[in-house]
Amino acid sequence: MSENYLNINSKFYGYDGIIGRRDFFLNIVLIQIIGQFIYIPFTIWLQRVITSLTDINNISSYFYSANIFFKLYIVAGMFLTLALFLSNLIRRLNDITGKNIPVLNYAVCIMYVILTCSFLIPQNIIKIPVLTSILITMIINLILIFTPGKITSSLPYDYTKEFNWGAFFGGWIWGLFNKTFVTLWDLLLFFTPFGFLFRLICGLKGNEWAFNNKKWDDVEKFNKSQENQTIFWCIFSLVLIPIIYTIILFSVSFAIVKNISSNQDNIIKLEKRLINISTRYFVNYSISATENKFYVYNKDWKKYNLNQKQNILDMAASIAVYEKEKQNKSKDITQRTFYNKSDELKITKIYSANNLKLLAEYIEPKKRENPTFKDLLKDALNSYKFYNAD
Image (cartoon, rainbow, N blue to C red; front, side, top):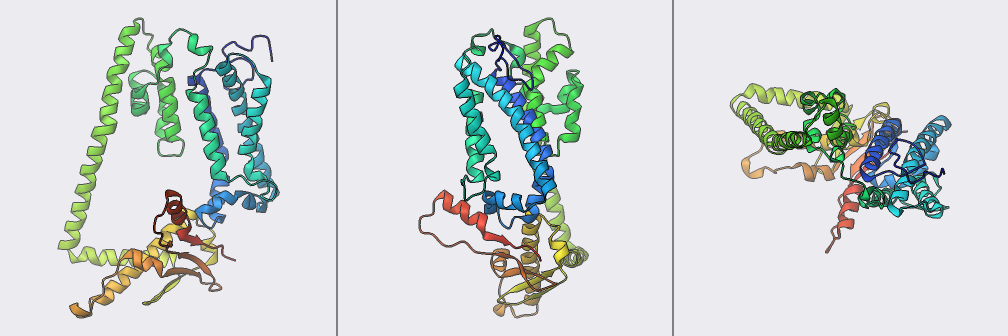
C-alpha cells in the first residue's frame, strides 16, 4: 500500500486510500448489479433443479452436479465480484479505524471469502448454511455502511452526497426536470431485477447530478428546489399512486364481477379458458374424492422453474375445485358438498405421463402447539415438494 493510504479514494476499484459510507454503498449497489447479471444463468438453472426452498441450503450438491464449463463460469464471476467488493472493504475499514491495520483487513477479507464461497465447500468438510452466510454478510455490510469513518466524518459537510429521495421516487421523470438524462435507463430497468438497484443509484447520485448538470450558483436555491421535488415525488409515489391503483383494481374487479353475474356468455368463456389452461399444462387428469391426479410430460416439467411448478400445482387444485363444483350443480341442495382450494391442494398430485412417477405434491404442515417463527417458516418452505423428471 502506498504512503497516501489515508487519502480519499472513491473509485469503483482500488485498494489504496479510504472510502466514505455513501461512496461505499454506491459501489456495493453497482457490484450487486454486476453480480445479479452474472448469476442470471445460475439462478435460472437452480430454479429448475431444486425440489424445495429448503434446498437452497444445499446448493453445493447441485453446484457439483453441473458441467465443468458452468462451474468455471460461476467461480470466475464470483471471484470477480469478490475482488471488487474486497477492494472497497479494505478502504472502508481504513476509514473506520483511521489507519491501515493489515491484520484486521486480512482477517475480515478471509471471513468474507469463506462466507461467500461456502456453497463451494463440500458439506463433509464444513457446513455453513447458505441462508446463514447471506445473513452474516448482510450484517457485515450494514456495519460497514452505518459506522462513521474517523477520517470522512471529520470532513466538511457535502450537500451533493445527501440521498435524494426525489430522484429515488421520480426516476427518469425527475431526471428530465434536472437535465440528468442518465436516469432514462430507468425506463429499461424498472420492470427488471435491476430496477430497484438503479433507483438507489439515482438517489445516491441525484444531488451530484442535478447540481452539476443545471449549473446552480446558489446552494440554498438548489437545496430548496430538491426539497420541493422530494415532497412532490414522495406524495405522488406513496399516496397518489396507491390510490390510483386501488381505484383501478376495484373498478376492474367490479366490472368483471358484474359482467360474470349478468352475462352467461362470460361464464361459458371462463369455463373454456379454464379448459384451455388445463390442456396447455396437463396431458390428462382424473378427479376423485380421495386424490386428484394430473399428468404432465417429463420434457415439459423439466422446463419449469420452482415458481412455475408451484403455480401449476395450485392451478391443478383450482381445476379440481371447478370440476367438483360442476358436479355439485346436478345434486340436490341438501346433498351438496362445498369445496375449496386449500382442501383440494392436500389431495392434488402431479404425475409423469411418461412413467407415472410422482412429480409434485403438497404436504400439509404438522400441527404444533406453540410453533415458533422458525417452525412456521420451515413448514411453509417444506409444504410444496417437487421431484425431478427422469
